[in-house]
Image: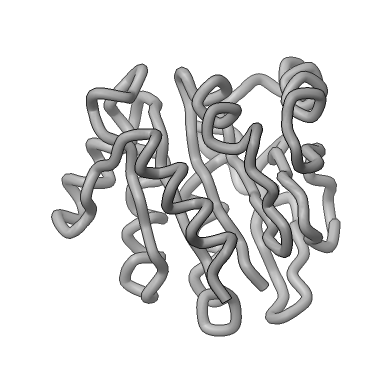
Length: 184
């Protein structure tokens, strides 16, 4: 299975739409941990789904992943090997939905699935260690550059933790997403 994992925070909703609105994700699942209050997530998903070419929905507990864009409504981990599903986590974290929790849960899945992981704009350090753990497991990892970030906190921490990361513009990240979706 092909999975794209994206973590974002401040400024993320507009950037997610830029990256994914006009992209047919084909045989790929996109799972997004966007720091956002639970009460705002449904309206964000509703608007995103209206604008996007691919289906956008709220990720439910114990949901099997299919070819669409999922937005995490709370802390979520991925499980399974070839038939992947999402489960809510009761783990308490500072940032919700938590990017590190999502990314770390995907490390064992990288042996049987193709994964692309991306950290976008946001304050703090959520996603940095999870992205580094995925990188060490052989996953292709990207982070947004300072010029395109609304807040260059999370990508900066990811780059500080992993000097091999090359910060990229949103246009470059979108190109990598399309390339990943279309590869055999």
